[in-house]
Length: 216
Image 1 (cartoon, helix red, strand yellow):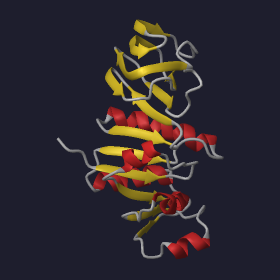
Image 2 (cartoon, helix red, strand yellow):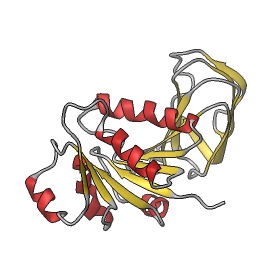
Image 3 (cartoon, rainbow, N blue to C red):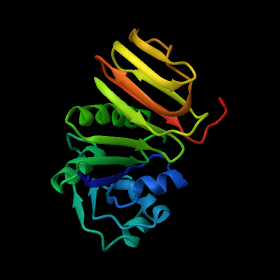
């Protein structure tokens, strides 16, 4: 079954890599406030532009004046990124890519994006968060397959205790492992090719650096 993919443009760092360009193929786009600055880098025009526009420069507003806007007051109960997600879901999205979701000057926003990604995955959505150089994927009970380059670094960051964690095709594989909450055991592993994760219970984020082959 084909998926309806929407990319949410957020305000964090973004590099246009070959891998990112491939991931964004056939996607539709929604800009969240200052995330519109990535539209020129990607060579796209979003379907809609949402937010309170408190972090958007006047020049950007002028350059993309033709893009429909859905403005919200600054005193709102959700981030611009969360509002953009709801706009995507209302348009039929079942796969979400957050471009510019990692790094940046607001650690609170970056961390909230990761938590939001896990919550969306629990609702059955496919979720990728990316800066182009770094990628994050929610890991929940079940299995997750990731096509990562041989030799690239990745980590599993447990948001809870993880039980029944297995990692196949990694330099440091695991089989039915229990990872205590707060443990660094699963930080800085190395892919030996496409990876498979299985998990019995818990919530986690797989953070990968496809272009970082320092562990090769």
